[in-house]
Length: 490
Image (spheres, one colour):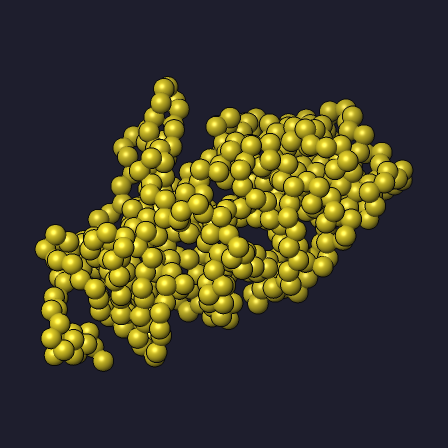
């Protein structure tokens, strides 16, 4: 059944119907035009602008109770296994959303009938608002306040989701005053996950302490599978996490025993329906400045990673059982460029909102403009790519000792992590110990760096970290100090 037939049926029942007219988005417009790899976040030149998507003249239409729309499913050039990145599909969904928002106040009951095999974009229309679905018919009763916030976002990610204004020389302040809050007294939490091994227990402990040290008012929730021991769970709880045991989820696109084999376990965060919003944070990050205010943003908000993709290390999601079920279903049809959760989520959520890169500062340095690899003081968090701080001596970032890891090396970022460590309760320190193999690896690469005479000369630093003489913590399977024998390299 076509839209015109549906309209004729409603007209025959004596209802007043109106056709909505709008110009189609130019055919040469590409998805990449709305999601560029880089934008000028500080507006040093011109303020970033998204290419226009034509909208109807909303003032030409009176109030209504029902919208009927035939929704496109994407273009013929769509690659199998990838999410839909079709500008016309986005336009139709945005036209409908704006019609609803411009129809009246938040108390009005407006229903939408989407006609099509694929239904509307879940990035705009929540599956929780689905009233009924039969074959090609999808009936929604949208939450108007949430939808209003959605249409207040930039059309694409070519602009920051958060507006900002300058205050003083070289400073950028983010302005939250114009952002409407769609939920009264929302329940919110920071969330991380540990699965498959205890290698990141120390990272999760320090992450919790960094969030607490930022004076947050939110809950902290950690998802853990059965590989995390009781002793480690007790330490994580003491660090500030509320522990929730989960069954891990295997990635269909990862190789057996690969580092990302069970990364789809991150999808469990959508099952935390006790919360309206969560900010997920990977356990190899620390928060250095309070980010509670960023809970004001809608799903899915993140920083850009590469071209049209976002980084899933920090992201805001809105827990929903129906979203979780949909993601589990799409796991069999959508691919992942890296075999893990980030690749998959980028195909599931192709329309996302760009946060400032300072909110998820990726510790990777390119070019020669910052030879010392200093982290800006203005960042909100640091994402430790490469070898993690607890896998090095505290004296310096051991990524300097490996030529192919130099781009991840930063002594200033390393110092910031250990600063959080020093401020946390001493009883938690034992979970950040070195195992024999970790200590042997550090010594091996220090020796190789010396033989190669690497120009940064970090291998000449006299190591004072007492952890080089002890093996303790989750990495050794004990919370008590144990003298470690480390064999020299041949």
